[in-house]
Length: 106
Image 1 (tube, one colour):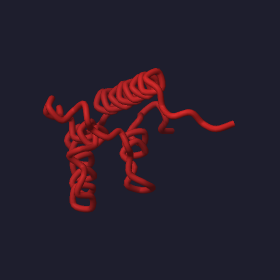
Image 2 (cartoon, rainbow, N blue to C red; image 1 turned 120 degrees about the vertical axis):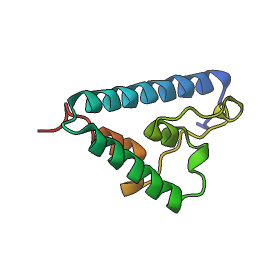
Image 3 (cartoon, rainbow, N blue to C red; image 1 turned 180 degrees about the vertical axis):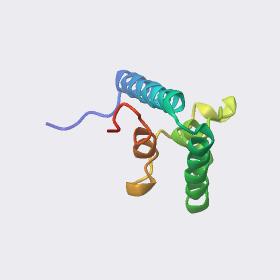
């Protein structure tokens, strides 16, 4: 059977999934700061990782996950058109944030 093109409901489903992912990752970041032995080191690691992505990829400013990583709010005029795409492999923002989760560490 041929796959039908995205419908409005499919788009709503993606938006809900995206919102859930962002909320989950924000929760991980908050937990990481609550449990951090040294918040300055945690903050530095986030910004170092974000800066390495920015040097490697020219589109970081247009990615919602990158803004979550650095704790910024994208300008409203571009937020609705931002990509939720993550970077591959070791550059994955989701993987980086999930790696900060104190509940998943030994």
